[in-house]
Image 1 (cartoon, rainbow, N blue to C red):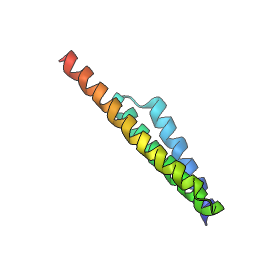
Image 2 (cartoon, rainbow, N blue to C red):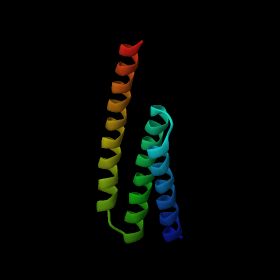
Image 3 (cartoon, rainbow, N blue to C red):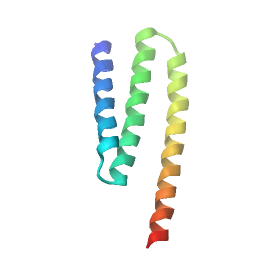
Length: 86
């Protein structure tokens, strides 16, 4: 069952990457990037459970923290860009 879940998360990651590349607006791309971060987090957790190694869980936690901080930084840059244009 864990193998099926891993393949499903990989499929979701591919869909998010397509949306990230083709997204018509910057907001679409930002949401796709945020969802991709969550999907990668889920994949790392599934991988860690499947292999019985806690190292994947540690990497997933650090990845999630940096993903959230990156999302905030991009959102702030976009907000500043939007207020400068208006």
